[in-house]
Length: 265
Image (cartoon, rainbow, N blue to C red; front, side, top):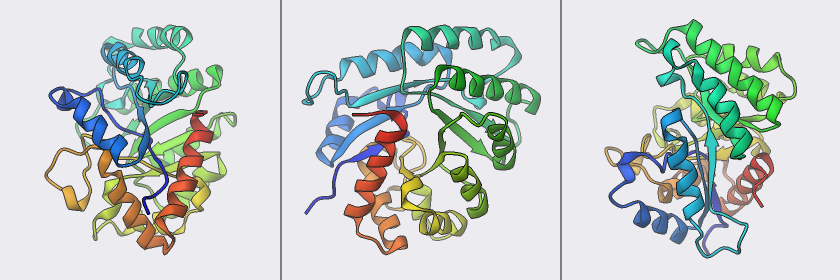
């Protein structure tokens, strides 16, 4: 028996990596019971292509129930002083084109990223935009989980997800207490990912989301390949084994979690 439908809560389906076979990628996803795909925004120049992609996918579902869902935001990889006007553009874009979330936004404290002051300005501002719009927020956090937690605490009306989670179990528990979901992808399938595997095993199932982050972060089976939504089933199987719970149980709950957070029918 196949697992219940899954939702890929973070997939860059608009990226150029899919330009040559996007329709086939989507068909493989739907054929493998991926019912919905959430597409995060990264730069202002790409918001329109996300909007157009989501609008064009009518699929086989009844009218009013799209399968692709847009988010609009400014990713920390590409923020800099010269694109501060993008913040005002984001406010206007969200007001006109209501997405299911604000993001992808966040902090990335690895070397050779934008300076921390600039990242913090864009992140905190987007948290405020999400709060004002009463939308969930999709957060990118690399080597910055403690700072992310402290900034979320400043606004207790926020809710959202930490995508491709890389923090500790204790930090995950703090984020869950702050009304955030923990989203896990293909990295959990690697034997050396002991910290993330512990998170996958021990957090409440009611706080877990599944994602691919395609075209990046393929699972162990598909390492060195372009990632795609159909591979989400591999992550489901790994987490099922770690938690010693049926895949069907995890699929049902994580899909329910995604529908609740993002208000997907």
